[in-house]
Amino acid sequence: MLSLLYFKEYPDSPDEGLAILSKFPLCSDDTVWHKETEESNYCAIRITFKYGNREFGLTNAHFNRK
Image (cartoon, one colour):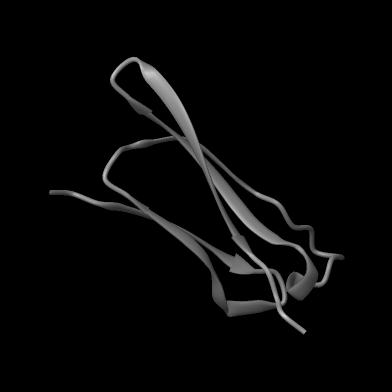
């Protein structure tokens, strides 16, 4: 089965980031960080996909523990 990988690198660390692996085609994607924000404090990506006649959203968030 074909899988799709959506990967978005951290703004200040392009060799690392967040990813979502899906077996369904993506309808939309978005990242929830900005260049002026420290990646360690604000990391999430969101995708939407359709399954049948419904649209679903999935968010992958990274929370640092200090």
